[in-house]
Length: 143
Image (cartoon, rainbow, N blue to C red):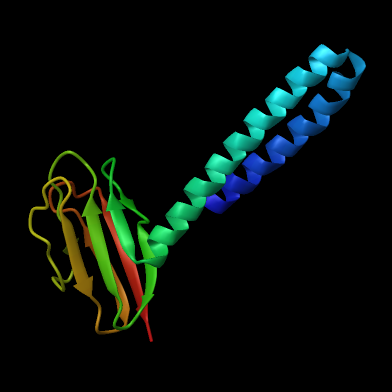
């Protein structure tokens, strides 16, 4: 989903650049400078979005799940047998990470706390926050 958002952002920047360039050339040098400033601002915004997306992909690659805004992110993660997943509570209040079949249970995690679990068997592991049961996630473990 974040890659789709990044692509849409980049397409929007390109479209705005196409529109801004002819306008700057027709109205004089003052407008050209303004168009160049706008292009720089748009490029900076697109770069920031790309950096955020790259950071999110890197986090998922390390098998880390952020707990923030009453949500697990990513809420679905695919890993290999033997991989360890770490949940990090980035909210200012407690959460838990509790498997639906009792394979793991973090207990209460204060703000800033981490919980890790190593998956030794393949399968699908559904989990919830035991405090906020609307918060759900899934780990898919393959060989």
